[in-house]
Image 1 (cartoon, rainbow, N blue to C red):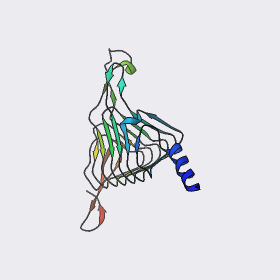
Image 2: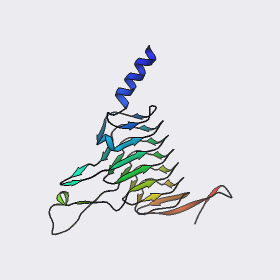
Image 3: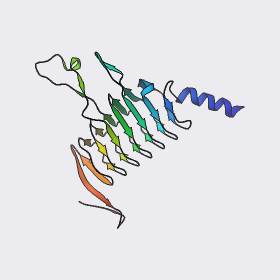
Image 4: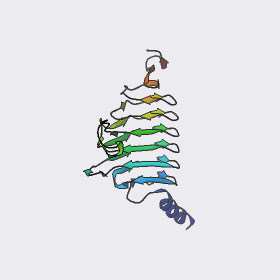
Length: 190
């Protein structure tokens, strides 16, 4: 009996309404979610407190169909920001530290146009993070970036371009620091 009550309470507290979410996954409160219908979370994943997850359906007069997909066994630290007008995909087994920002959105910046918040949004492409990647504290991953499987992104990095699997990157803008050599089983300088 207690097990059923605990399961029901857990579902009400940690499974936002309208979201496709694995039975064993958790989205902690407080949280801010826009368009839960556009968000899919696999099994055994965890999103910690103060997450802001935005899958836009409309901006000004433009209709959008954004999608945010998290695989299985994904851990996301507190205060994460995920903003999509197109798509963000995070692969199985990824870890995102606290205060990570990922977005596929850019504002128009016409100097002689209306205020920036009134200018149209642009997407320079979806963001895709491969399997078993680690994203360090306070990192930003910007539109159009694709990270291959097993990448490591150092603390406070700003990722503006794509990197292949087994890359260790850091900096602002992020650059390749090391590459994992599967033959020697070590991280080596490029």
